[in-house]
Structure formats: structure tokens, C-alpha cells
Length: 485
Length: 94
Image (cartoon, rainbow over all chains, first blue to last red; front, side, top):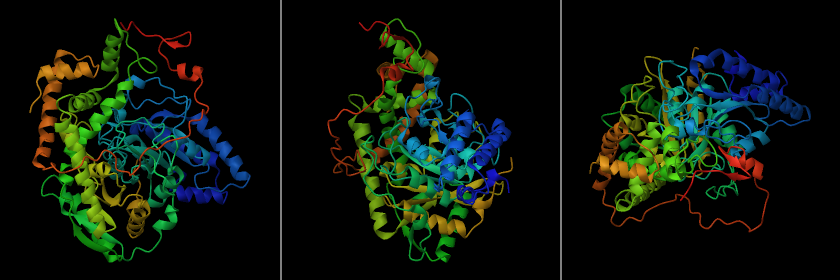
């Protein structure tokens, strides 16, 4: 097995036993990037020199006796994470030359743990999309079939892990942007509970929905990454004061007695690929065979999640993206006066999807429409949260498909915004309710494309989700498959 | 409730986005179909439902009123398109 094919925890074992050094692992990832990224296009910026320096520093720390699992581990970061001194673009022309003077909290935490960033990954522009196709710079290709999308908006981070270019990566998830690419790329991705991980320094799309989370080749890798980035941060007043458990210990606790809910609203008669449905239901049966209890539950307002999201998220985005005006950073297009400068800069700097969402949000918040749209969506949000709270009185984890289909072809949905939005139909209500959700592989389509199982949990019970996920994963072989590149 | 091109031009102005005629026509059609999809929320009776803006039960997260190190002026200006004498230069405002 090649070095880049190992999981993070396997690579960490080799570092601990001194079979390899961090410099070895980093060189392996950089070589892999050089070999396959011309085809995959996961990276916007590769930080080769900095990575090797960081790897040497990590090896020195290890020589002095440090043993953490992330010490010297090559990882990748979605390009909406501010990295001091390293270009951060959100895949947008409007930030084409932005070099942050500070690190995001999650980046600081990974640096403190000794992780080695090999680069910044491609995404949908400002995290708005489900295929990574709205990136202003390049399209990312699914490592399992280069003609297909990796999902989005964290498509670059997902593809990088799937292709062996990094052992783990960080993404962000506002409506499904970690889970859906994880599903399409055949890896594990987690959106933590809202407030579990600090959002400080991760460029905001929708502040009440955004969460940062890890991608890994398996559940244990995700648990290790979450342990490193979770925790309250005084610089993010929406971060929660809950203690961070030992996720790896939690996931290996016995499965028996865990109650799994299957909500009928997530298995509609139309709009769900039959192979996806079959794989997900088989996974639930496998969990039952391992000792979990399976029950039917209902989340009656879940079908309204997409509509509520497409008011809430664009509204918040219209406010968050008002700062991109050509004054203090990023692109500036000159104008006759200040307003002309703003309008021309934003017209030139933002792509069509971003403009659509800014306008939708501005409209929904404007005088005369606020009650009918934004306020209404906030009420639907309460109904959705109540649905989840009620279901979690009966069960501990809810199992659904992550995405309605396996990866679609590049260009298939770019003409119809609404068709693209429907890719998130099963992930979106989780963000609105603020609960945690994970996707892991549960099968492959006849054409060899990955299929994802979504597991949803109570707030701050990522450990319980990991437990269900790890036991299922270990009873199968999906996590051992690698794409042929 | 479909959008008109006049609505789109108005919203574009509020959002400080210059739009061409072709874009106005295209966005009017696309935004109208999205808004039509969103209208299904009207089927829900939310008369007695309290809005939920924030999922966590956090209130008034304060810090001590103490000055701590922040960015230097040089750092703040480091990405400025037109810095001048420690300021961000912009076209006329009035």
C-alpha cells in the first residue's frame, strides 16, 4: 500500500513507531498532488515549501517526545479558512488577491497540534453551491469518475482526501456542503452541532447555519480531527461552552441498544435514486443485525426545509457579503463615485450564483416582504427544531440517505438553479435545526459511484453518531476502497 | 408572486450590484421560479409559532472591557487597493 493510501490513524501509528517521518508523509502527499491534481483540480493553492518546513518542525517536536495523532500530519483546508500569509479567495474573483493577516481559530488549533497544511482547496464561490462548479477559478473532478462533480461546496476538500492528496481536510457546511461531497466522493464527512466548532476566521456565508467540520477516509480519522478543532472560543460568541469528549473512545463503545430512527419523509416516492435507497436501507438492516434497535420516526416539516433555507441563507448572505465593496481588500473596479465603485466592483467580482442569492436575500429582507419571507422562515425553523427534538425522544440517531443520487456529470445541473438546490434536500434541515450530521459510505452504484448514509444526532452528541457510524463501517469494507487515478 | 424586471432592478440597486439588461431578464426569470418554490411555506399554519433565530440557548455573551493586542495598521492596510497615508482612499462620497 502506498503511503498516501493510508488512513490518518494508520499514518499516525507509523509516525509514532518512527517507521516514517512527517517529512516522508508530506513529500508523499505533495508528490501525489503533483501526479493527480492536474486531473482532479482539488487545490487552488499548494503550499509545498511551508508544508515541508512545518513537517520538519513537527519531526523536531516528535523527537522531543510529543506524540499527538495530528503531529506532522498533512491536511488540507477549504479556501474560506483564513490562513495568515497564504492567499484565501473563497473561490471568488472579488478576493482573488486577499492575503489574510491572521489565522482562523481552527487553523490555529491545527497548527498547535502540529498538523501540516499542504494547501487550500477549491469550493463553490463563497460556499454557494452543491457541485464546486460555481468556483470562479476551476472545476474540481470526482476522483471516482473525472467527468463527474465531487459535490459542493467543499468539493476540493472532499476530493483531496478521496484522491490521497491529504490525510484529512476541513470544510464548511451551511446546507450540506461537507456531507454531500463526502457522500459523492466516498469518504466520511461531519457537520458538527452548531456552536461545537469556532467560526472565527472562516469567511461567513450564513452566520446562523455555517459550521466547520472534518473530512476523513474513515470514522476514526474524522473523530481525531473533530477532537482537535472543537471547543469554545471567546472570539466566536456563538460557540458553545460544552466540554470536548474523547471521540475515538466514544465511538468504540458497544452499539447494543442504540435506537435508530428511519424517517419516512426522507424516502420519497420520487426524487430518490433506487440504488441509493436500497443501499441506505440495507445499511440500516446491517446496524439492526449488529444490535441496534430500528424504529420508524417522522419529521413532518422536513420537506419544507429547502424552501426555508432559500430564504434564511440568502438573507444572511446578503448581509455578510455587503463587506465586499472594493474599499479595504480584494478587487476594486473604479467608479465615478463611491456607490458606482461598489456596484461595478461587486458586478465584476461576484459570479451569477452569488448575485442571485444576494438579490434573493435582499428582497426577502426588504421593507414589505420581511414578514412574509424571513419571519415566516424563522417560524418554520422552530417547527423543524421541534420535529427533531420530538424524534430524539424516541431514538438516539436518525438514518437517511445523504444525497438523492450518486455524483452527477459536470454541467448537468448548471442551467437550472433550482435543480441544483434539490441536491441538498436531505442535508438541509439538519443545518436549520442546528443538529450534528455525518455522512459515510454505505455502498456503490452499479457504475462504481459512491453512495452515502447520513446519520443525524442530538445536539452535542457527535460521540453517539460516531458510535453508530464506526460500528457500521467496521462491519463493512467500503472504507477500504480507493479510487483508481 | 413572480418578480418583475422593475423589482430586480430595485433589488440590484439596494444590493449595490450593477446589472446588464440581459442579466436583469435572466435573473427575473430565475428568481421568480425560486420564489414560486418558496411559496409552499404558505401551506404551513405558523400563526402561533414563535420565530427561532438562534438554535443555541446563548444570551449576552460578553467579555471584559479590556484592551488586548489586535492588528497593526500595516496589517490592516496590507490588502488595501489604494492605501494613502495610513488611510483607505476611495472615490468621492458626496
